[in-house]
Amino acid sequence: MNDQTEASFISHLIELRTRLLRCLFAFALLFVALSIYPGSSAMYDFLALPLTHALPEGTRMLAIGVVTPFMVPLKVTAMAAFALALPFVLYQVWAFVAPGLYLHERRLVLPLIISSSLLFLLGMAFCYFLVFGQVFKFIAGFAPKSITPAPDIESYFSFVLTMFIAFGLSFEVPVALVMLVKMGVVSLEKLRAWRSYFIVGAFVVAAVITPPDVVSQLALAIPMCLLYELGIFAAWLATRR
Image 1: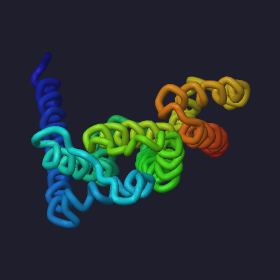
Image 2: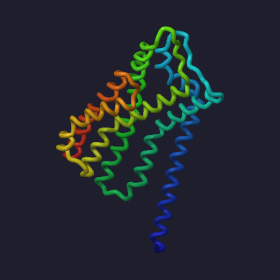
Image 3: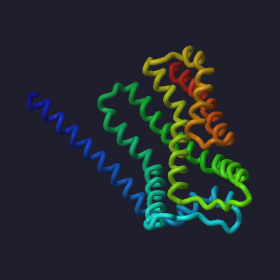
Image 4: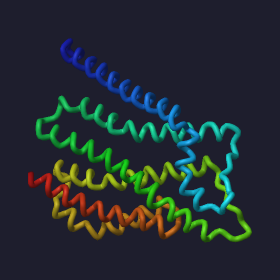
């Protein structure tokens, strides 16, 4: 390795460290800001609204662990801070790899980063505002009258985090299809031919990831199928241009 190559390698490492520090700083800044206002406790209360509305009146959630009432709200705050910082993090990734891309690749990557960030957040919002309420009401309707549901806040957070990731990633289907087509991995004809297989796969994935109720499975599988069609259309537009 000559001196010029070594200097270039070191400069890339320095730039990578700088961008990682910027991402950590953005995350830390948002975490501190959200901890101050509206506060970790208020954020957890907001996250728990779909479940508390489905529980019998007067029922409250439980905190079994000693430090759980302190740690779980902080985890919720960290999750919200990461979600808000995601566009900035993806931009730093794009800015790091952009010098090694061709001009037409740069024009493609930035819109993909913006759309992937928005779609991930849209998937989380769809899960919270439209899915959780129906799922918890459906599950609470099957509880025997002799049982008073009182979920643990740690279990609830783990469930919510899993659902957010599942819906956020499922909403990335259009972005993934556009990238596969532009990279030449698959063609539009193949995507159209695989439509029926994707529908079956979407329902299988929904059955594995979501709780064992029809509402949540349909709420994940149907949007995935619609997003698949949207991805085919977006890939057609991208190749046409």
